[in-house]
Amino acid sequence: MTSTGEYGPLSERKSGARFFAGEYRVRTGDVDQDMRVRLDGVARYLQDVANDNIAAVTFADTDPFWIIRRTVIDVIEPLTWPSDLRMERWCGALSTRWTNMRVRIVGETQTNRFNPKPRPNGLVETEAFWINVNDSGMPSRISDGALDLLAQMTDEHRLRWKSMNPGTAPSVEDIDLPDREHVLRITDFDPFKHLNNAAYLEIVEDELVDHPDLIDGPHRAVIEYLRPIAPATPVTVRRSRDGERLLMWILVPDDDGALAVASTVSVTTLANAAL
Image (cartoon, rainbow, N blue to C red; front, top):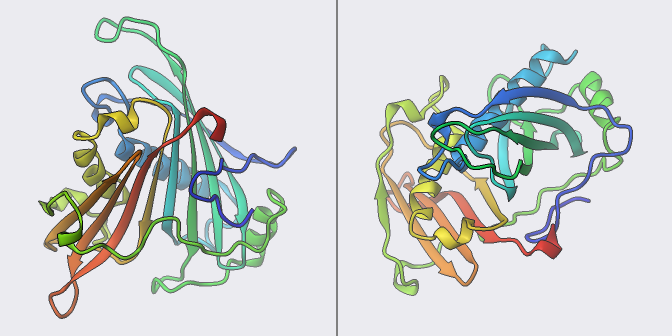
């Protein structure tokens, strides 16, 4: 499988393949007013398990730098607070410079005085397109040791990039919803002055407040990163609702001052048959 496809299910783990597992816990800083773990909370969990995974493998010194080109988040059953989480991470496909890293998040729910009713256990399936880069940030060949380890997890060794979201933003005159501004905070940026992946999804959560039906049942969020966003950059959000799909384009000024797409997002309901 070289692409998840817009509505296709994410790939299963190869039988007998090794994987990395970690135990985590839902904290209140990652949930909304309904106790649901927000998409930006899921992104932070994915970053944590990736960092822990890289620190535990033999190629941590040879391949320490990776950037994410896309993340797919399939919320089958929402993670909620309070819950313990088990995260399993493995390589679902790869080429010589990039990989699809799958993470399965299973939430074991508990109750407390603030959320006393029993709830289903959470289940979120994710896939991220990771690019290996050198210390200058340029795409780089994955080391032989890393390739050997990752290749044992999957039979797909010819992974190619294929966008899942429309990369060109429509004219504001051609859509019903007006543009809105999003103000970034200095705490949204990582030590390399890049906008944190979770901060992009905070922008999405701001929009989903007006589209609660999209996340009432199983849903898929796809975010693709096209260009970096630096501190103090003004951000414009363009969005369009088409039936059971919300499209978003996160726009920033280019060198000439025109708006350019920094990231694209889609949030779509998933029929049970597609899961």
